[in-house]
Length: 302
Image 1 (cartoon, rainbow, N blue to C red):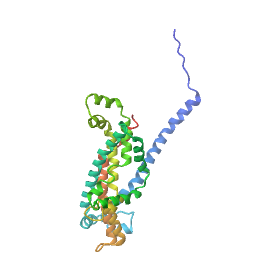
Image 2 (cartoon, rainbow, N blue to C red):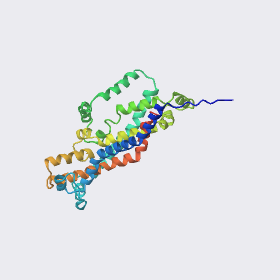
Image 3 (cartoon, one colour):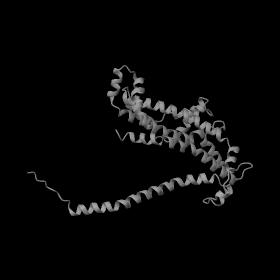
Image 4 (tube, rainbow, N blue to C red):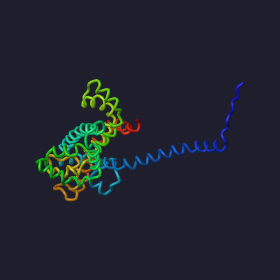
C-alpha cells in the first residue's frame, strides 16, 4: 500500500502569499497610472505644437496654453507654404535619408561581417580604432570634415550631405556583435556548397540579420532625418537645405524679424512647419515599430 505524505504550507508563508495577492491590483493600477502620466508628459508638447499650428499667432503669444476651437484657422499653414520652400526641403531631406540610409545599411553589415568572421592582420587594432571614434565628440570632427569637403569642392552639394557619416562606428559595432553570434557551421556549410564570401553573406547572414537591420534602419533614419549640425555647416544655400536647417532658419527669423510678417505670425508658421516635419517620423515609426522592437529584442533571444 502506498502512502502519500502531504506537506502543509506554513501559516506565515500562506499569510505572505495572501498579502501579496491582495496588493496585486493596487500595483497594477499604480503601474498603469505611471505609464499614463509618462505618456502625458511626453505627448503634451507634441499635442500643443499641433494645436498651436491652427491658432492665430497673437493667441499663441497672449495665451500659450489655451485653445479655442472656434478660432481655429489655416492661416499658419498657408503662410508657411507661401513663405518657405518646405516642400523642396522635404525633397532634400528624403534624398539624404534614402541615400545615406541605403549606404549605411549596406556597408555597415559588410564591415561587421569582415570583423566578425574573417581573420586578417591587425584586425583587433582596426576594430579598436573604430570603437575609438565612438568616444570622439561630433564637434571635434566637424572642422576636418568641412576642410575635406572644401578640398573636394563638395560644399553645397548632395555629396556633402550623404557621404560623410554614411558608415558610423556604432552601426559597425552593432553588426559585428550580431553577426559574431551566428554559428560558423552555417558559413562552413555554405562554403561546402560552393558559396563565396559575398554569396554566403547574402544567403546566410542577411536572412538572420533582418531583425537587427530593421532596428538599425529605424534608429539611423531618425538620426539622419533630425541631423542639424552637419547640414547647417556643409550647406549655406537654400537649394540644398534640409528640413532641420529650414526650421532653424525660421526660428532665427523670429528673433531677427522678416519683412512683411509679424513675429506672432512667424510663431504660428513655425508651429505649422514643425508639425509638418513631425508627420514623416511618426508614420515611419508606426509602420516599422514591430520590426524595431523585434530587432532590439533579437540579441536577448539568442
